[in-house]
Amino acid sequence: MRTKIVVLFLIGFALSVIGFVHVFSKSRQEELAELNVAKDRGSINWYIRKAKLLGEKRVALPAFTGIPADIQSLDEAMTRFRVVLAEPTEKYTHMAGEWTLLTWYKFKVLEDLSSNSFEQCAGCGSSADVPDDLLPLNPDEIIVPISGGVLTVDGILLTQPSGVGVDFSEGSSLANISEDIMTFSSGVSVPQTHKRISEPKKFLLFLSPTSQGMIGKLSLGSIGAFSIDPVGQLIPLDRKPNLISQALNRFHISSVDDLKVYRQHIQKSR
Image (tube, rainbow, N blue to C red; front, side, top):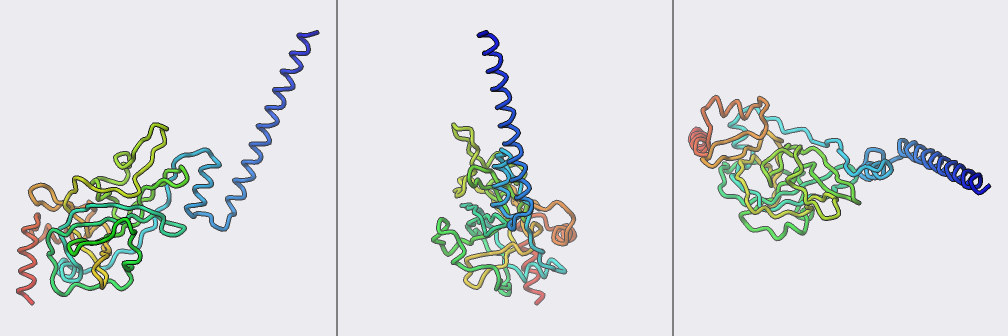
């Protein structure tokens, strides 16, 4: 008799568990269905809610990149944009509205290779947009905002492709985010929102500065950024054929020194 009672109890318990799982599964399916028609579908908060519902810890957000500025020649790029040799010193990533992450880099300008006629960018933001953590700014520094980045929000690791595709703080592809993530004893991987760069690499940047000179936008996208190796050689961040890289090859410009000589040639021809 006691055995029958135990068996019946176990059967009842099993049926209760099955019923609970069925109800829970149905509830989750209903929540997923509601998510699919939510007004903010596709926003960062929407992706976070979906990840929590599915028990996921990482989300790959779609890229939001602008259209690069159109140029016709290297001469135009050298005169239209502020061209600087600089090294990043700080990095700050946050949510910029509902749809995208934004990563700000503070650069120390080592040398300015610009002509005096470079254009200012009227729609590239103002000092009020710069995160307080990156201020104040010294006269030889400039802030460069880049769409995308890596950030943890509500325990969910968000990654969004960059408009440049390179993490300036590491000089490596953003596809490999492991170098930019701190792992705590809890096992939760959290990227640094604000990072000070202790061993910066040098870059050549074609920037559209604001009237205040505080912010410089990479209006050319990835083709307007080059890393500099230890001997001063230019290494394009965008390896695809593009106007600037092709022009540099055509004029045998492979280093920062070569570019300085070419700039002098442009100035003399005017």
